Length: 129
Image (spheres, rainbow, N blue to C red):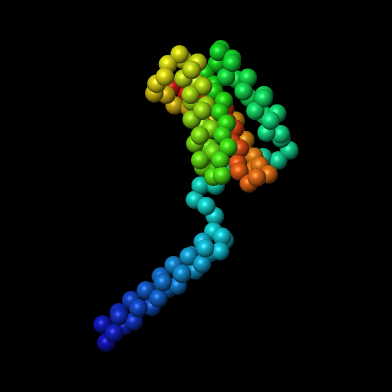
């Protein structure tokens, strides 16, 4: 008798796990679930050209260890990676080297969704160590 009850409980638990998995899959496919790492919301009220003009002055100021980078891509993550890589390259240029090991922190960033559906990511990074 105990074995039958245990088997029934096992089957019930298995059915619940399957039901939960199917529900999660349906939510994911229908777009109801949140992404694991939310991307910054597209900027509203700022002009991307104005921001780029203002922030690009950072790269010519040799008195600080900050770098500006921007990128346009169809994918937000790719735009972020490329923009931050360009900002790191600007810092390396200020250091007068082509390679170095250092940390950075984001001082400011902006994400714009352009009319053609691509994303323009602009960022300012500061060298931390």
